[in-house]
Length: 246
Ligand code: DHB
Ligand code: MG
Image (cartoon, rainbow, N blue to C red; front, side, top):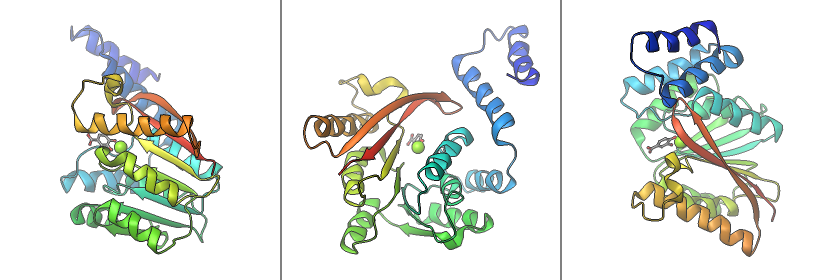
């Protein structure tokens, strides 16, 4: 950790605020990672600032997470990307920057207000030409893409309403080809994922999603998947990475 960030944690202790909490430590380390590995990016910072000013919830990926997604797209040489849950377009910009000039990114957003913020953000980022923002329930857009027989996506990022994740994943499989990669955000939910009694709909949604993956593993084996737990400025959560086999 940098001197600066470490001394901020030390200062808190000196002021008898007590030991830094886990959340403070995770945020400080995320700040360190940003400082060392990501750096300043005025276009992305403006996207976050304008999202906040427009009242969007502060649930965009952290820079470290978004860069991981960008790197997955680059490593996979993705040319067609599908994203569910545009929000203010923060991850959308990171993903679009991974595309070649002839690449294409379709991103689905329920809220027309959020989509307008995202459109302005991707415009400022200079990647609007690669991006198609589809407004409305993602499930409708997914059905439309299937009837359009859209070209399969190389990479699909699912980060919309958590309740529908299993349904989105099933559609995503139909919009994939063998070798496609599917990434799903927020699958651990502070660890509540293992609590069968937890009635929170988003937790239930992620339990149903894991049950779908488990059933696939015991049956058709259309995907190979793993879930990785994460900590950082957004707390304790995790993502699932799936490779489409057939
Ligand atoms: C929530 C949604 C997200 O996509 C996220 O990354 C974090 C939180 C939410 O709905 O609470
Ligand atoms: Mg998310």
